[in-house]
Image 1 (spheres, helix red, strand yellow):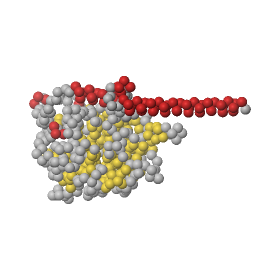
Image 2: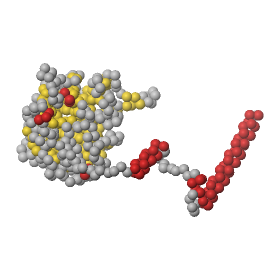
Image 3: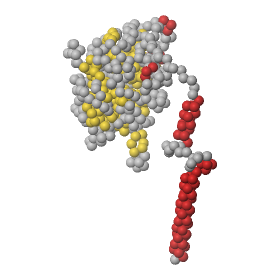
Length: 488
């Protein structure tokens, strides 16, 4: 398995000819060559990727311009520059239905994988505080909502595509039902409102993280410049825990198994919060927080849970590997490193950019996505509309590519029985040893092996007899010694 990290920066305003490279994609574990992306400067959280296979796209909300640059994965220059109503400060993608591709196509063998495949929605947050929702396969603008009083700093969607979470410079966090934003049938008297408005923070929201657990166990993590980290449930959006640190928090990432929280601080440190710690009295792991508790983190003078290699530059973006053992971090100077979370040491330094790191995304793939052929004949994405579309769904054209038809195979009963027998063996034999029991009656049917098997059985019987006699003698000796001791 390969893990790829994509990162970009905010760029410089004096780059008139767009000659600077503002984004790279490279492998975490190997020394694979990089993919470079020009003219890809963006605000924090202003870049998203659909995937790392041939035909996937990179969307970048251009910093300082009302444009979205669209890249084919692996190409250095943008394929399209799509005009939009205003500058966008944040982007996010809403996925299609779960496993929409994995159920029909083999990920490891993508010969039948469609080259033109896009997620369902692209959601952007503007400088004015508005939220825009486009349908990618048609380019239609489905919704424009005045959400925040100031710019939208970050947008996140849940893994099932049910909710959109927006955080703004106005210190508010709004939670929306996506179905409400894109509904075709709307009452004129009904105003679309967020299902929850969170106003617990006093300064602007800098980052939001949503874990990919099942809906009943998923959580929303918000960080702000007021030095707080707040954790909310997604079932009723109630506040679970509040952590207070001594510095402004710029970025956050959470372990995929919910074991630890990593915070990028304004002083250049990365603070680790272990969600589970042993109780000193019982030595049993117990969860921190819960039930609305407020926990103030003390100064880590021994640097037990602190990484300091970015100091004094603020840590603006964070990412984690799939197993949570490697932490990818970028700061305001353009430096980006990969650190081991256990030893707190730098494992690898990636190619540095010349301005603040604004986005870090880590992807897992089944093949080396950095050495594949670039799809240079990819289909163009429909241009984005700047006026809300007609609400009649029958008048909407959606462009979507379907993979090649797979050869239909008849049902093979022998392969099915062999597979079922192997599966049952795993359940019956939990020690992982494939063993067979051979009965004596079956041995008689094997020609040429009767004499050898008989000798082996006789030898084993003699060994069992000797061991039984030795055990009996030892047992008798023990009983004699015990009776002699009791008589005394």
